[in-house]
Image 1 (cartoon, rainbow, N blue to C red):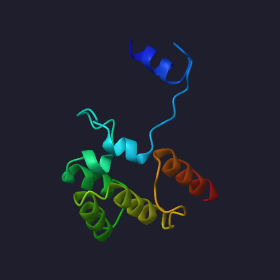
Image 2: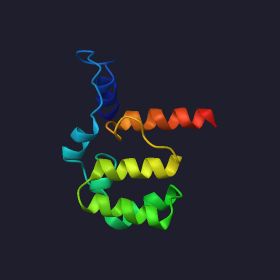
Image 3: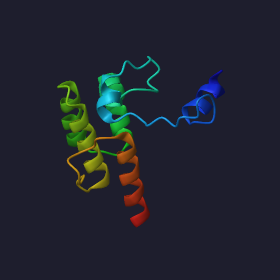
Length: 114
């Protein structure tokens, strides 16, 4: 059943529709499960877990504090954009992170430049 769901999601089973991934707003407003494997981490993680994840990204204490404040205020996309910009030392071009794939693709581009 589990593998069928994946094949269906990627258009290999059932009606063969390849579904579009959710944008940040859809992810933020979705009801994730409790395993922390879905949903926006800036919304779903407990503050201590989010702090550990941000420290794992090698962000400074000051940046971690600012990102945590934005997340606690409910500004999840702003917090995500702040973490991205601090992690990559480069401003995000199109008005902040709007889609998880956008975050990934921009990170990959920067990594390839290095």
